[in-house]
Image (cartoon, rainbow, N blue to C red; front, side, top):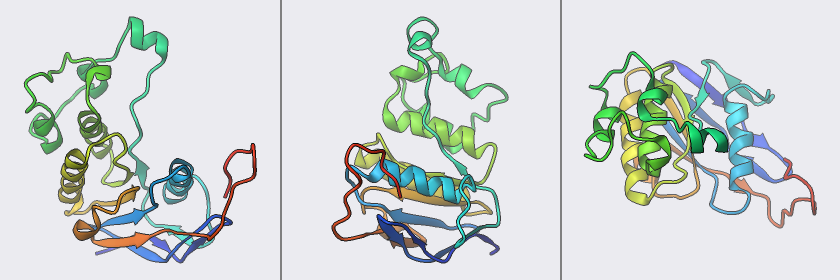
Length: 201
């Protein structure tokens, strides 16, 4: 299995990410811990893993893509809300496991408005769209209940086992037993971000 990403250790003023290697077919779970700093730490790390921020101890051998959240302006959400069909565009592989699982819900059709979907349903759509373009992803399970998060993780693991790879930036430790590799981010004891300042690493 070829190497997708090598991390020799990421040290900041706030935390330390121990070394790990991501290979094809693997899903690495990086447990960031749940708390007020999770989002900022997640965005910082996904930018490193996706190559948007260069880090001397991280080598990205294959480009990785973050599975981003669906967003639309308030104006569009009110007057021209996006539908599943518009978000998917064409061509669409309706045999894809992510879409099969999505459309198992009888209340979800291609005409359903995106803002009417639940957290797991949105994540399944985001994953389908991203994985249709690349097999190497960075993702999270934000906005999902434990059952949906577990389902999503297992589906990603199955999707990348034949040539893809994934890094899960997680704020709960539930996925440890299912991961190819499980890494815990180590927060520096007593770290407090500067008052009234944007959280920085």
